[in-house]
View 1: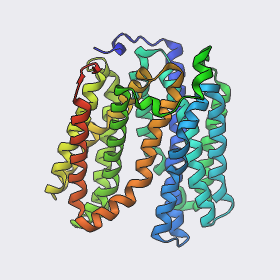
View 2: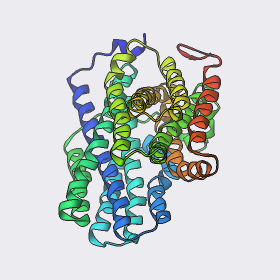
View 3: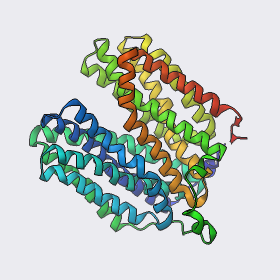
Length: 398
């Protein structure tokens, strides 16, 4: 059993956790909604497919570069100020297209939205690792992950109808309410942060390299899993529509496949606190690799919608469990004064796959066929499973 088996969160813990989940839902809904509005807005303005691809890539560009420095800043000064700064940048980003409807404003929106959400997200994840101590981490990150699943639905549901009935500017003005509401909420609540660590740890932090984190065998395996599972997640979102179109599926059928995956991630994340009390972290991470590898091997062998829905659902269950478990592990394994930096490095890997993979996999699929992408991902999951499992027992690397 894990440490979280003994967790007994009190009223204050639950209050602050619900606050973090609520703020995460609002800020992530703004990000998701802005992505959709920017994509459709680019089409409305006559942008080319290449330009729209750049608009999507720019959401992850700055987080890919700046997440580690952002994590160090949070470690140094705490979480409240970076959250306010991130929300301010997010508000400006969303306001730009509402005031000036042109492609340049969409580029500003995509770039600054990614930057603003990064500041909020790093701070929330650091707080999630500290709130209630080590015993509560799996519960905290499970709840935050459920919040992300909820906001993935809220963003599209908010933006789509407003665009249809009131236009793009109105949609961006509506999205603006989300970071403003989050900032107002943040100003009204108080929460206790872990005090700065005294002495040499803080003084030497600036001299430490992010590569120091990768010298730890356990952290190295965690980050490898982060990169591979993030790639597996992005490949599904990117390649399934291509594969569905290639075998003659309608847009509605493809949407059902993606919805099956999203529903599964929600279900498994609701179950994470229960699972964490019964199964150690490392077996769950290894299971993510196993499930992902098997599903990616099978996917291009079928053209049946019901069977593909089942495969998507199982894949969502397998990959969806990894995020809260990885975050809990990072906070347990990283040096106590560098948890924000450790979270930032994870975000670098996640945003790197979101920024770089679509173009690379699109080129590979165009030459070798879509099935190659599924089987290549299965091979990558299998190879990484071999590395992560080697020398790892139920508690972690030996």
